[in-house]
Length: 95
Image (cartoon, rainbow, N blue to C red; front, top):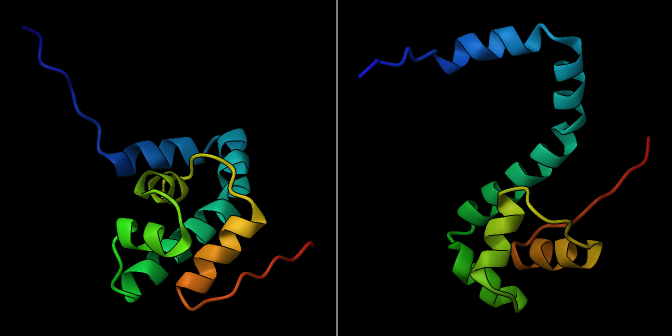
């Protein structure tokens, strides 16, 4: 059986980020990643599991998992419920 050569993630990232199209697409996702990170951080600071947060806003754990995984397209109403359950606020700006 042939052994596969593993490439470290850091090495792949360096290669990918040299591609202007990849960099542009990656940068376009930054606001989404920042929102997801802030939700996860706030939930952990509050000491809540995904299931507990879901119960607080009247949804299922799988919905919180999808939200934190960047899947789906949550409404502003949903984001506001999540924020309120975490003692936070949602701010949206257009630039």
